[in-house]
Image (spheres, rainbow, N blue to C red):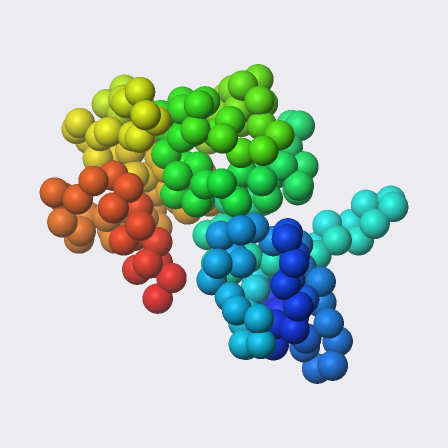
Length: 197
């Protein structure tokens, strides 16, 4: 129903911002990552998701379409509601979440408030099904939780981008034009920048 809101940021608090559009203030629940990208008193555009429940109508706003897409993907997982998805996206970027799913990195996902090991495993299990057509075996995780790509960076980047809602047909041409010496994370970041142009 609402794709985006654009206007002046008139109020910011922990977990939400208020954007005034044509005299109406829209309260958008959001992530810490989005709040870092906007400032009180300046104009901003947030891509929105309207959640309608029996007892409430809530508007969620995000600085980028990638974050919105990742939010929708996370809320499709059984047991992950909007508040839990916000918690994950406040702790990790969409790219990092995609890499955690690709690498089965439970530890990094549990850094988000309210996400325990069982829920992190469910997120990985349900979202990894979407990546099953891509090879995952070349990706390993260091003890610190950072992802290392040894070989096959393109399939890994394609798999991670699939978590964000991009099809292989859309991202493969962009990835093939990038410098292959980049890490998987850098390939994902650069692809998202180019797709956003």
